[in-house]
Image 1 (cartoon, rainbow, N blue to C red):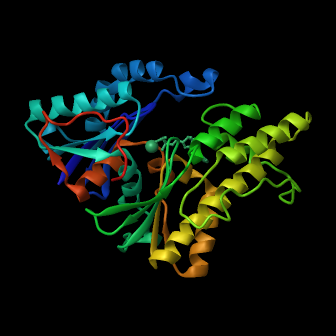
Image 2 (cartoon, rainbow, N blue to C red):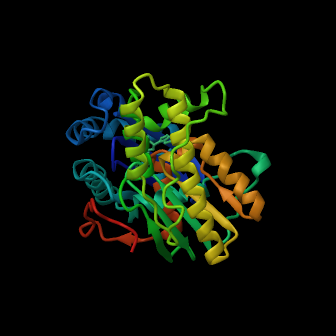
Image 3 (tube, helix red, strand yellow):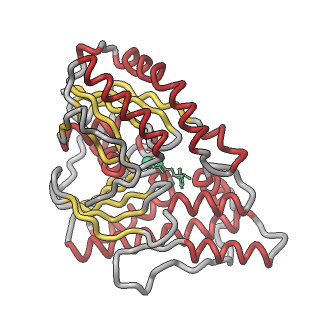
Amino acid sequence: MTILGIESTCDETSVGIVKSGTKVLANVVASSSVMHKKYGGIVPEVAAREQVRVIVPVLQEALRVGGCTWRGIDAIAVAYGPGLIGSLLIGVETAKALALAWDKPLIGVNHLVGHLYANWIKTGDERQGIRRIQFPAIGLVVSGGHTDLIMLKSHKEFKWLGGTLDDAAGEVFDKVARVVGLTYPGGPEIEKAAGSLKSQRANLKFPVPMTASNDLNFSFSGLKTSVVNYIASNEKFNVPTVAYAFQNSVIKSLVKKTFAAVAKYKVKSVVVGGGVAANEKLRAEMQVAGEDRQVEIYFPQRTYSIDNGAMIAAAAYFQKSFVNFSKLQADPSLYFV
Ligand code: KG4
Ligand code: ZN
């Protein structure tokens, strides 16, 4: 089964074509992130206008790269939430129009679930072989808008275990980047600055959030305040040192809570997804913790960590949540239920 997946929840416009939920035939991504740089964050109207402009060319390019015509597509999938309403509408209405015009079934996908299913995409790396993610698994979604721990019991049964009480992990990377003078999106900039630190033994440390809480929740706004206060009282602060200390605190918090969930539910697999999953330090720390506890840790390839259409098509294949095209509505507040 070959599925065409559309992703337009935030500032990316992407169409992926995926066979059997694992083999990517095409994954074309257009991002408007450079247009938001000068504002230090996404301007929804700017993002949506750009998406209107690029959605059809992106679709045509995906079909060209995938070497298929509409006849070779078996179903259309779309991320219908959560996200920015103007952006979501463009993907959802395009998907509905294609389903009607091409007479194909339509599959609605939760964007956050899509991030986790990026892990089912084959890496093409022979050493890793075919990924065999075992259920039950713990899912960690770390994106610009969300930080959630999920129990994946099967392809059809998910349970929300905890999430952030305030800022999302990606959001706090973006905000801290802005206060230290780095550009949007802040995650890659902070990672680069932290990696450029000459001595990795810098003395600066920020508190690791929520270490004493017994739940599976996160909180990042206190950490953000610590960084802001540090900068306010240290005029000549060093960006790599701050970036390094900040990144460490976020990662320690993510690793601690993920493995608290692993221990509580005695699972053997962890799947991580979302833009922050592109962070190499997070990948390395999760792998170390996984090896210590003999738990398999899965991260998508970096290309499939950030928003993309292929992950939507992959999730659609395994979830097969078909909807009548007249019933599908963009849902900005969609969450795990
Ligand atoms: O999943 P995503 O592409 O979009 C949303 O669904 O929100 O995530 C975007 C977020 C941004 O906050 C960005 O700063 C963060 O992911 N991000 C990173 C890295 N690459 C992207 N955060 C930390 N390290 C990175 N390398
Ligand atoms: Zn996302």
